[in-house]
Image 1 (cartoon, rainbow, N blue to C red):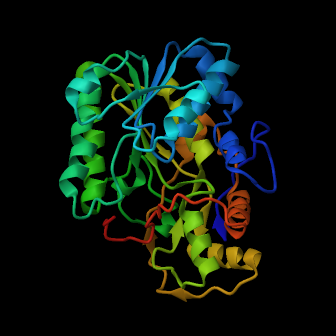
Image 2: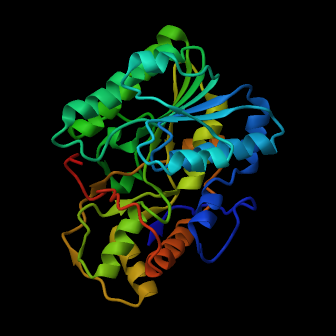
Length: 356
């Protein structure tokens, strides 16, 4: 089912055979590794998370709070978003994260945000891009200008995507940070624009920055493994044309992103956030079907290339992911089988034309 060395599970991840509740899931997703606690003991000042209301933002902000507390430091953790979901803001506040309402497209509003020497930039737009390309470009390319000017003197960790590489041969083991970029579709192109804006201001303002190219974070409520498990459970054929993929436990991606603030440089440090296992869609689906006790069927034929990333640079800097792909599959199948909550946000990982 997989190629490459697996992740190594860490004592700070609460090893469990099943995740029973959303509270337990959120606890695991926000559990900081020792290396992050040590990094936070060295890093000074408050941290602000821009775009905190996305899929990853809440548990990343809570992890920052927990790591700061374990490190014995006094710092504010501030989450910024429009907060269209009214339940999220009180959840963050209960976990020690301050909140600020802001439309990041409004440069004057961004200018009024609190000072913070540590910035995690998570804002962006992907799904729904087709048909609303102008909004996608505004979010992914204009907002970074406002943020770069406001936080020129801060350390910035900004999220990007492995989509900027385009498709890469499966035999090569995944795209590396030094590879030529070949984004396919307007979403990926606008994400490259986002990177270039931050890169420009890193040069011009000497802003210490990390560019974090994420390739498929997953947890129990969304992610590529959830997509496959739901397809298999429903009896729908699985398209194997995009035949291979990486996944990384969202808690590990959170930790690596926060840890990257300590490694930020000018010009920016570019790091892939990806799991070590190269997984087969066909074989993973078969493993899911076996766990569910159902049959699985397939359409298409595996292409020789896919959206794959080599995460070895990140592992060397921040440590290997703590949760293995095997455990992620087991957790996901159990969650889906029991009818656990879903965000209903498919990854559309099978898209090979860059349309989302």
